[in-house]
Length: 131
Image (cartoon, rainbow, N blue to C red; front, side):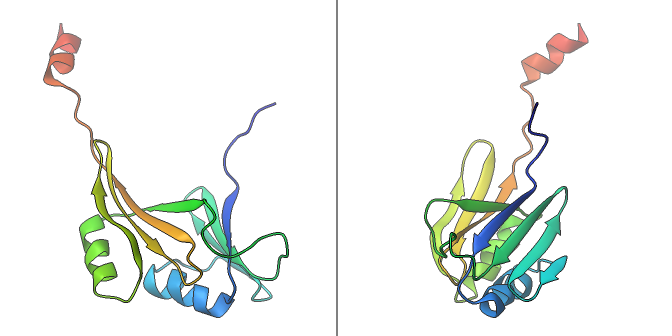
């Protein structure tokens, strides 16, 4: 037995219409499935991100989970965030392998806009492979 992949990520929200405005309007996600305006799915590559309301065991708001969306141009996203009224939780951050910014959705669920860096192999490793 093994786990093959992540089927989906889901955030509980208090107001589906307000959340859809953020995820579809601000972030530009494309609706994949709508289940009675209570559970909304967005297919992204080989996984799905979902939002939903009315499930008693799920509570809206940041409780530790974070979704990280890989973006094509982080600098453009940072400019868009700063030009909006979106709450910035952690401003632009850079690590050796990536860059990111963390923002809040309308329910204060954490959303990371993330861009991986292209890591070049050290020249000594490249030379060693040619020998």
